[in-house]
Length: 162
Image 1 (cartoon, helix red, strand yellow):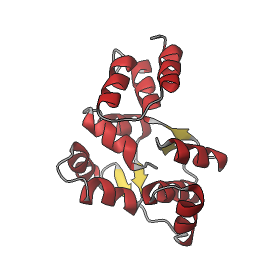
Image 2: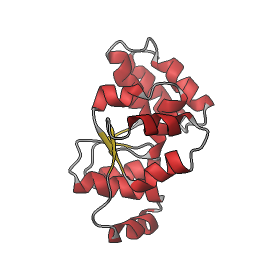
Image 3: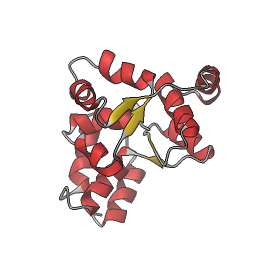
Image 4: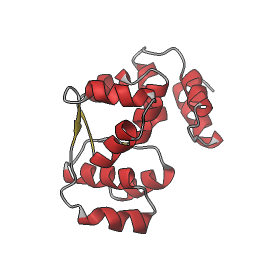
């Protein structure tokens, strides 16, 4: 299961394939598809998602649609985040790819295993796919990715790049 942020930023850094290589098939809810493909015109993520559809990315609808509005309002989440969280619960997903701090906190309160984009780069370095997590985190920040200094330093410390 994935929300739009990991898709957008990995595509922006030409690392979209890490999703497939690390996680295999991924499902995205309709709101995420609309955000990254239908409204993502001109961005790298649009072509990446289109190319991966029906190969290793699938669009999967939420069964309990009545929960979407409730979660959007009560947890102050956007539509894609709410659908991704509900879908992860419904499918008993092994993990949920999600970045927004509020959404991550909410998902973790529900007992979901959340993986954020910096952790994807952590895993890529462990596998020898990239030489430096710092370079990727710096590039993410330049693209507008919100990463607190505390979280930035913690990831680098854990990977031995502090």
